[in-house]
Structure formats: structure tokens, C-alpha cells
Length: 247
Image (cartoon, rainbow, N blue to C red):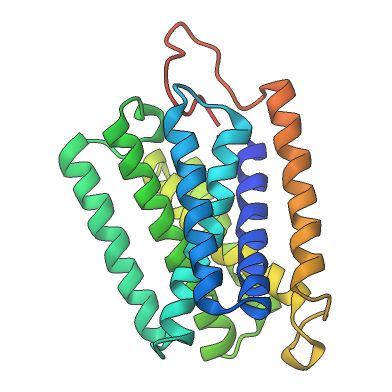
């Protein structure tokens, strides 16, 4: 995994968080979720239609998973009144079930082995579950546990470094390290994006969701544009038939 992947992934988590909040604040919640679901379905359909990793197609799908995954987690809390202390463990169970089904079916959880439609569907189901889990966990630490958004972001940044160090120093299984880090990127990016957007009365900078979403989106477009042109995230091999390249 390249540094470009992790930076872009964290940017998508923050952008998805504030974009979901922006839509919920300015549209009817049911309409906002419907728009998110349609956009997510369209982006995923486009990703599934291509035969190899294409940077802008892949990251468009990730962005829409981020927006829709946030909506799924927030809807449980806002519309149904489910506490984050309940929804976070629930989404953890969902993630465990998806990963378990993926491993039992394919005998691997490596993203570098995603060369079939079934494996890619397992991958995107896992990604969606990680976004929902990360959203609920980030809100749990920031609001329910009263850490605040900035402190939560710092805590998750430190936690994000753990699997990399464990892999480097302790030889932690690389697939385990990847998914651990991948899950943590969601509350990491979302916490800092929320900190930028919410009012000073809530411990934030008060920049509001719309401007923060646009700034993070511009950064995403910059990185994805660079990756599209440079192909720095693609491993050129004789077996370059995989759908995700190197990332």
C-alpha cells in the first residue's frame, strides 16, 4: 500500500462525514438517504463494470460508500434513537460476519487477490461495513464519551499507527494490519472533519459542513488526478489483470 492510498482514503472519510451531514441538514432526511443510496449504487455499478483498477472510478465508489455508510450509521441514531454504544458493537458484528463469510468462501481476505466478481462484492460489503462502524465509533468517542472531535481525531491517529508499527516491528500479518488500519481511517478522518465543521460551542472551528466538504473534495480530486496521470498506485506486472492493482 502506498502513502497516496492512505492519504486519499482518510480524505474520503472526512468528506463523506461532512457531506452526509450537509445533506441531512439541508434536505429531508428520507430524500437525503435516497439520494445517497442512488449515488452509491451508480458508483458501485460503474466500479463493477470495469475490468481493472482505474483510479477515478475506484475512488468515486469509495467516496459514495463514505457518504452512504455515514448515512446508514447516523440514521440508526438520529431516526431510530439507537445509542452509539449499541450501534458501534452492532456494526462490528456486521463487519465480522462479512469478513467471516468472505474468508470461508475465498480462503483469503487479501485485496491483492480480488480478481473475481464475488471477491469484489465481498470487498465492497466489507468497505461499507467499515464506514458504518467507523462513523458510529467516532461519534461514540466524541459525543457519548465526551472526548470531543479533535481529541478523538488525535486518539484515532495514534491508533492508526499501531498496525503499521506492529507489522514492521512484530511481523503482524499484513492482511490483519491492513484491515485494522483501514477501519481506523474512518473515525480518524471523520473526527477531524467534524472538528472543522461544528460550532465552537461544540468544540469545533465552526467552518460548517458545506465549505469543509468542498475543501476535502478538492484535496481528493487533486490526489486522484495525480494518481490517474502518474499511475504511482499501480503495480505493473505480467499478471496485471487484477481489479485493484497495487493501490
